[in-house]
Length: 111
Length: 114
Image 1 (cartoon, one colour):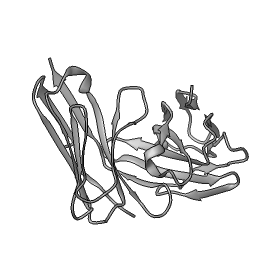
Image 2 (image 1 turned 180 degrees about the horizontal axis):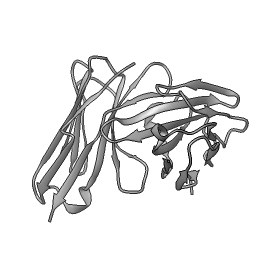
Image 3 (image 1 turned 60 degrees about the vertical axis):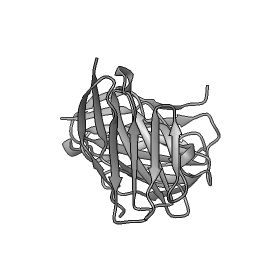
Image 4 (image 1 turned 90 degrees about the vertical axis):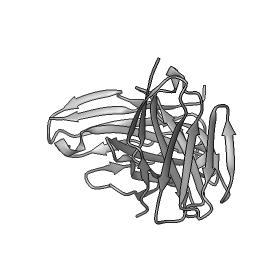
């Protein structure tokens, strides 16, 4: 099946720093999604990208849908302690609601 | 409040003892799905359902069963649990055709099989 390689696996940064994470695949996806999971909760959608080359922002978060449709990145600017969590990329493929998830990036922010 | 409700939140069981994890949604969603989350592997789909009485295998269906007798409920059944099914499980739902944009996830069920 489809596979997504997400990196880095974890990051430990200082509050105020910018963060960048990405996902790559050998497969093409129709939609790229970025989710955040906080401890004890399910993933919550942050950003959805629908077209190759699309760049979308949500507050301090910016994500891009790669031109080749095989990759995406998420940037977080000026990180704050509440950014802590696991961030997942996901690619939607096929005609239905099929999603493939990356392995996740665990973000830790030091105040 | 629109939500996906899973029960139980935590479960410790012994190998071979049948168990069911329930999932219920109040949004009239057609599509429901079960995932398991393991460190470094992200979320992997176990089973999904496009509508009542329509279910299909995801990427890791071995050792699991599901049923969809009603639109709101999508229970996950482990007939004979084994230690390798120790994991964090999530149920998700969406409107059919809305694509992945509409996924709502439950809060998770942490299962330990000893």
